[in-house]
Image 1 (spheres, rainbow, N blue to C red):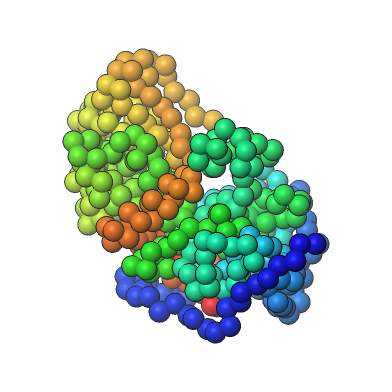
Image 2: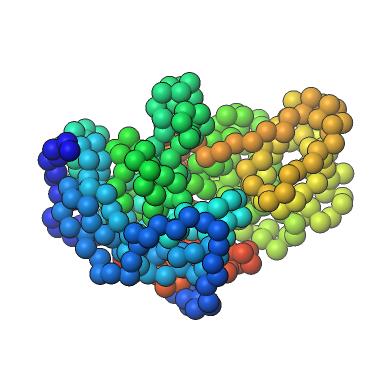
Length: 405
């Protein structure tokens, strides 16, 4: 085994950043019974007392995990790997709740690995560093997003597009994945996280950690296509849906200088949309919307996972315009060929962002004062938060205060 010298955090440096604008919604834990499933079960989990131990030795950390598919989450402990020479140990302070957390717990996208510790919107502070770490020191403010490793050798990795890694089994997901050694990965609904230093991002001092956490998934998911397709002055951008992704899409597109329109099923959130920076807000339940806005937009970001008539939305694009699919519907989408042929329109997709682009996004958000609008909850409120996400009852991202785990 490689010998590792560890620099360890020895004092409590609780983050004291301003959390103005957050709502503390304690919520009520869901005590419904659990159901079994076909996913893989990792028998390493136990409700034993947390034993973090020395960073350079394996330990156990307190988490909230789903013990089985579709089961309510509960407090337990899972193994924490020993800190390697190029690893950092993060004291997790906040973890955002993404709709994809629910999809994976419910096995909507395929069999999961259980117990599952969700969370890929992670903000915290470096507590210890391995002997070969060069990028980080104890006390640094860091974030971790949707992946914690990649092959580093394929064409995409070499091009700095790690999110599209094609080597081996692709990217190593932050949770519900397996590391290079085959052990399961556990996410941010946890007290601590060990990660290779290359896969952590620096959170600027001006960004409060709680509102920064959702940027690690929701933020980069909308920032990447806005950048790739050139949202900026003189460009008209539409954002479909004003939820966890959509509200950040509006703020980021406006900050980039684009003219922004929200397309939502109703006008219920119109006031919020305009406050967040939209120039216009239209109801897609009104057929007149599609007639009045035909051929208007250069770029449309579809942030919802609902089954939409994409051909109708493609009709809103100008010549050479692009509709980018960001949500992941459970069923295949269908598009009429003529909606693409007429006007040389494109239907594309985009998945999160690279490490460099995610850092660029964080710096951009710090420069423009952009954070997620959140409801801060204790860990005991996770199951209630899941219920509310499914009911579209959140403004606009739940974030767990991990001090309550």
